[in-house]
Amino acid sequence: MHEHKIIIIGGVIGAYGAKFLARTNDNDVTEVTLIEEHKNENQPVHCAGLISRSGFKRINVNPDKFILNKVRGAKFFSRNTSFEIRTNDVKAYVIDRKVFDSYLLNSAIDSGVRFINEKAMDINAGENWTVKTKSSEFNAKNLVMATGANYKLHRKLNLTVPEFLSALQYEISVECESDMVELHLTKDFFAWVVPVGDYARVGIACYRNVRDELENFIKNLKQHRKVGEILTKQAGLIPMYAPKFKTEYKFSGLNLRLVGDAAAHVKATTGGGVIMGCLAAKHLTDKNYENGWRKEIGSELYLHLTIRKILNRKYKKHDDMLMLANKHKQVCYSADMDMASKLLKNLTAEFVRHPLMAADILKILF
Ligand SMILES: Cc1cc2nc3c(=O)[nH]c(=O)nc-3n(C[C@H](O)[C@H](O)[C@H](O)COP(=O)(O)OP(=O)(O)OC[C@H]3O[C@@H](n4cnc5c(N)ncnc54)[C@H](O)[C@@H]3O)c2cc1C
Image 1: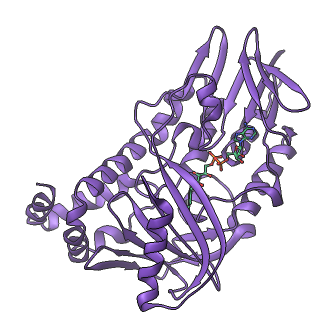
Image 2 (image 1 turned 60 degrees about the vertical axis):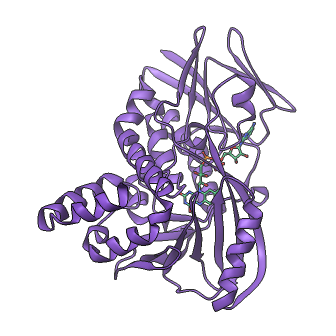
């Protein structure tokens, strides 16, 4: 019988992956220890909680227990114009991240994962990985860092840190449609209004001065809508996916894997990382983890990054882009929030129907 010990540091994606790692068969026993500093009520939330319905199916999680709202479409705004996709179907859910995270943690514990509710203060590579918390020390040959966009331990181990945007979000009451999310395109990224119930999550991500950017955005909203008091403020970082970012290391016989925001498994178009992180985490059980996750989501993440680069480079053309989208709405109706390749497929089909669309696209790109 082979015995493996795995230590996982961090959160929601770590808990999702831990469940798969803890499954054992007759010849293999895997002891999985999950070290996560927060639990339930003291967990800081930094998420708009917008998750696609198809994404929940892909990760095989029933969202019923964490749904706060259902979304049927999206409105995109540029400086002078707008574009919307409105459907009868529920396309995405707005969820309660605390309930979702604790559901994944409890499923990991139910699968036999040992949960340590402490902060990993230090890591050292010797004969084993040694992870120190305030009260104990844990040893194993395999370490998974699912530490989110907190890169302290990356720096300690001299690992590359991804590029990131700063994000700030207020929960605030604001006049908006209850089943439509809003995306207001900006130079670096976008600002969002995600309706929750009698309040919305209003936020922005950018490379600098995030507080000023959000205050300005809310000031503009106030010019034509009722905006109430701020209920909560949530800040966080959004890592940018980089195709060459290494997610698997060998340290003289010791294995290290990175997953979730720690590995920048994030859609560069929207900053959404929950589904992509979970899809990557399933491959923690693969012999070749790096190949496994890349095969499933590598090209999707690359496409999201390409779209993000075009949006940022051509930010002066956002009006033209939205006008073009209005002309070819059907391309977007069956698009998938997570899988950018579906949009590309729809675009190809639309090219066949409207070859002149190429001229409009070339005008925007060049
Ligand atoms: C403002 C904002 C809005 C967002 N909105 C969305 C959205 O609508 N939809 C979406 O899909 N994604 C969204 N995201 C991204 C999403 O939140 C992340 O992609 C997702 O949480 C990644 O999960 P993770 O487990 O990798 O990291 P996290 O959720 O950050 O979890 C990492 C955990 O590790 C713990 N940890 C770190 N270091 C240690 C340590 N040394 N010891 C112990 N524990 C440690 C942290 O405390 C944390 O609990 C948003 C992000 C931001 C900032």
